[in-house]
Length: 592
Image (cartoon, rainbow, N blue to C red; front, side, top):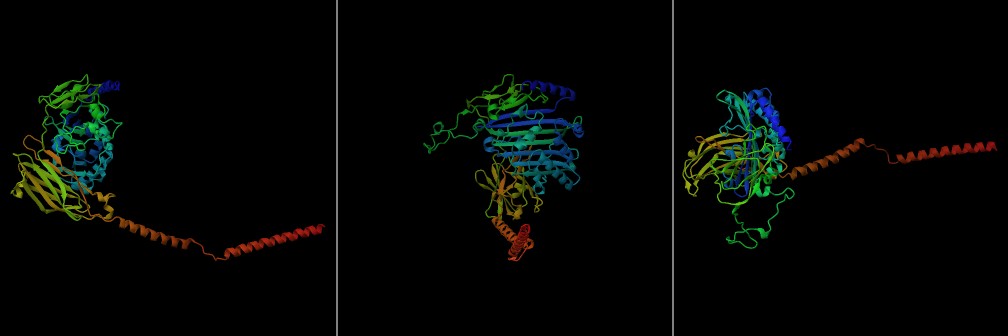
């Protein structure tokens, strides 16, 4: 392996001299979180000129993905693979302002250039089916019933010339399970393909054992205002929250073992503390960890295709300034002006590792809290009707929060918009008399069509300071055909999470939040009755068909015919024997 890195570095230098400056960047940011958690954010960004992209000269953008974009006339694409739930109360704000986080399962949206909505939808179906095979996901199930056309929830991030001919389409698969089959195509799109650089830390066992993880791919055109040169930017990100204690568990002992009772540290101040009841005592020291322990391996050298070279700041760590950090020999450290950021260079051909020993906590990093907290549940009882309740809480005591709430409901969940109600209650529990028009400032509603498209609802909302807004509306549950129920019909049907876009203020970007997904229980027939009918019908058909078939094929003969046949044959044989005997006797007498 040590001989491989110098050869790869020399080859990269020769390629860079022949093709010009490299346009590839990668970065890893690490931040310990409360509760023995670690946030790891991987970011990979590359730029390719539009001319080379149109001339089929693929350098950093994979050919397999580039040809799909060209064939479907996709100008901007965003894909998200997400599992788990972000604990905002414990972990603070989401990384990347929530933009690179998707709904649970798979979420994608794209701007497609077309002359009509019908043509755009046709290209959208080709795009989802092609991406399904590329990323080993069930994106081919994103049909018309799972496709929406948001109006104000998303904005293009790229520089587009013909913005009027672009059509935005959005689709989700909340029931999709993200696994290693999706990680392997993701790694193949990277220049170093997990062999060197920060991508060498990717391990499916560690990544999908995280409490929360999200993989994102963003492709957009970018143009420089000075010379008008345009390029295609491909940005791949992986964000995960790892449990340090669970990640440090060895591979040969994957099953967590309970801590022996004599090793438990309990809080004796609790009134229920006893020999069989223990409340864990919060530790006064910060847990120690290393990269090789958490990810199972160190960083295997520097990716030679990055444009900064071996001296780039590739790994950054956010810890208090008094925290002790040890690094591999040959790497250098640079501290930020904020006092909590530390960035490190990667040696060109040696493994890189970080070591944070266990120390007592002197100062904790203050985590920034989210602007608004959202909670979404299904209410009501019975199998025919119900309701949806969404609660927004503004923790700020000064500022009002303005945001867009985007709801995508399946066609068999029919909302009644005239029942939409909004109530405002202060965080102190006191109700406030505020007109609904000051809370709901805009509505865009696109009703569903059975078995063709779902319901699309976008609300422009405003939550006053130090208040909680509750939205409630009634829904009706449709009865499906028995062939439309999945094998696990009693489990329920997945409802896609809602998207919240907090409107940007001056010199700020929009913040995105996703609510949790829901399980909708529909009226489910007794599937044993169709099976009983099928079994009974099959039995009757088998008996009837068997009887008729026997009548048509079987040959009927008299009961005594076999005996007569056997008798006549016996008589003939005896007669022949008598004739032979007489002849034989006659010959003997003549001889005498």
